[in-house]
View 1 (cartoon, rainbow, N blue to C red):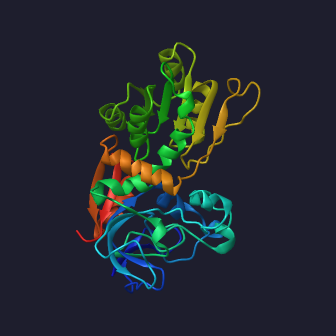
View 2: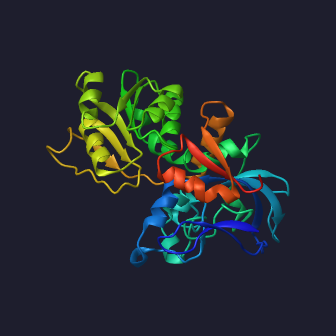
Length: 346
């Protein structure tokens, strides 16, 4: 089968031929109908050799959706032909966090060498994907795999971040979204669907700000050195009760802290390497700063249900498997509006 692999440190990903996988006991073979392209992949491919944590070659793709192609011995609850989405942040299944469905926070994954597909284990950017346990597959139940595959990360990750702040997002409050890319434009929709808050979106690109307005942002602000002052003006000087930074670079993290109101939540989701100091005089009083990661299996089910209800829809650009390296080039250049999706069998 064909697969998109990162094969050499510092080199571009390549489309190669690899052996077809076969399911063993307890495993599920998935015919991949759609695989998402993510900035996390670019972050992985930017790591230097001395700190690269995975083995090469690595088949990319941690967002996957497709059709059950074959079942290993002992698998129950699934049938060939079932359309499913992949829950990728897989854990041991037994530790206290996994017992709550929070496999994204598995306490033993590193110890046991458990990696998500595309982030250490063979990923979804291939014609077929081997899943180690059926619990990592959720039914699509009528959702289009192409438009719903980004929900497994670009939907789940902002949902997980937003969910912890819902008690603070009451009528009359403000939520700020920094970075209206693949995750940010979904975050705007989730905030509109789940809260009565006014949503202010920040980005450096006018096309991203236009997308933010199209999916429901009440206000948009150019993310420059004046952005924090502008948000303060829009909030009558008080700031926002929740700030979600999907860039995570030092300038955006600093802006997030600057616009956070008293008792606000700041969630640094992006992988830009920035950090926000916490202490008296560095932010408003009682600001809570978090760095959430992905989401739980239960939360993915909730996100998929929101999509079925029409509350959230991902803007996608599609590419064939042979075009996957181009998709990464366009993403790295900031030329993807929404989320890029690779179709291995198109």
